[in-house]
Length: 87
Image (cartoon, rainbow, N blue to C red; front, side, top):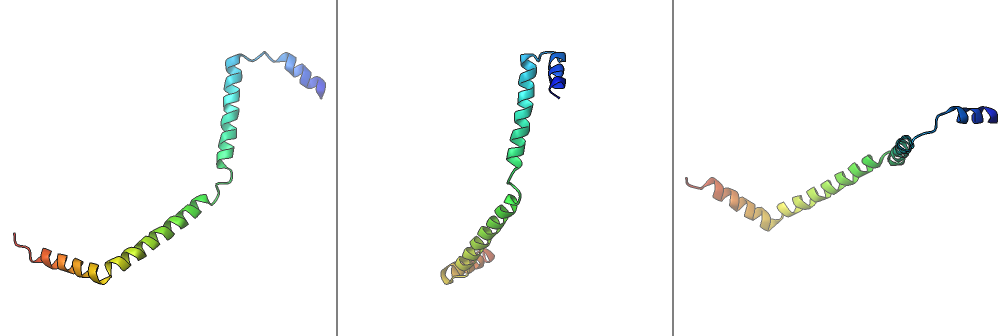
């Protein structure tokens, strides 16, 4: 096995600097892509869940504000004023 590897090394032409750089860049690119994809399963689902929860909480707060007495009266007065506007 070692003789085959040694024979292969002597039979191959030496790599140029640009060929080595290209090979290294390709290797780093593959490693980076594997690392970036690792451990991300389900992350978007968690983000959607947190976003949905925040949206529901904001909607509940806005509903409470809009249905409170002073805001409700102000909105009704605004609507009545808009409906009775003269052009």
